[in-house]
Amino acid sequence: MIKRIEISEGSFIGAYVSVTEDIALVSTHLPKSVKRDIKEVLDVEVFEITIAGSELVGVLSVGNSNGILVPNNIMDQEMKILEDIGVNVGIVEDKHTALGNLILSNDYGAIISPLFSPEAVNTIKDTLDVNVKDLLLGTYTIVGSVGIATNKGALLHPDVKEKELETVEKVLKVPADLGTVNHGMIFIGSCMIANSKGVLVSKETTGPELARIEEALGLIEG
Image 1 (cartoon, one colour):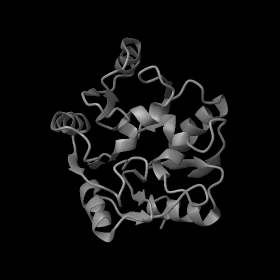
Image 2 (cartoon, helix red, strand yellow):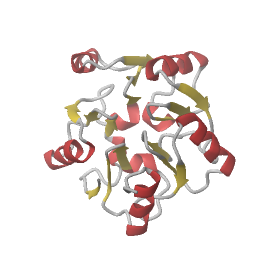
Image 3 (cartoon, rainbow, N blue to C red):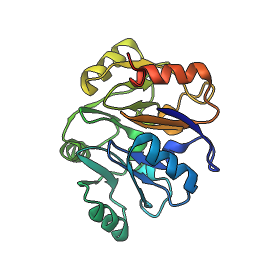
Image 4 (cartoon, helix red, strand yellow):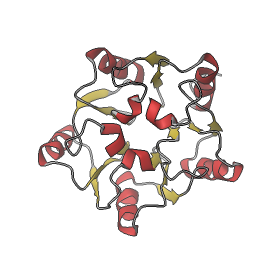
């Protein structure tokens, strides 16, 4: 299922939500209607939280079915929420805290920014329990902002080179394609959220973009 939505924060729903196959961590400021859409379209349990005192939950956290990564400035009460949910939490000790912008992952692999320290890479690898590869997507280090991945497919911004596309497919073990969102915007991961069961995307996304998203993320039944 794919659905267009509108949020008061603008087009960047991916900045406020971090989603896996089973759960969604969401900003406390998101409207109830959007939280309902997240629960229904993605078939997940929804949990309200801040990360490091910020509503930018999707910018500051990222995960898969094996664990959730958070920055080292996460607050004690936020850690308690995650512990109560029962997720495996990895705290990334690194000066780069926008983890959702810097990591593109599914349950099979992770493409990460070359900016991370070796210690951070080890935490990412151990928490997500997948093969990890540092890679630029085009010229971008913010690989989580310019792409999105599920257990069925991946969509990357249009300037990604063929060799990079092949590397993403090899690491994430799913087909990948190129496209845009929100009427030509390349920041795919910032403007949509997805898992293998569905996609929520900003309302400005065009019909042709929706068709490409559905195909790339394996939502079209063959």
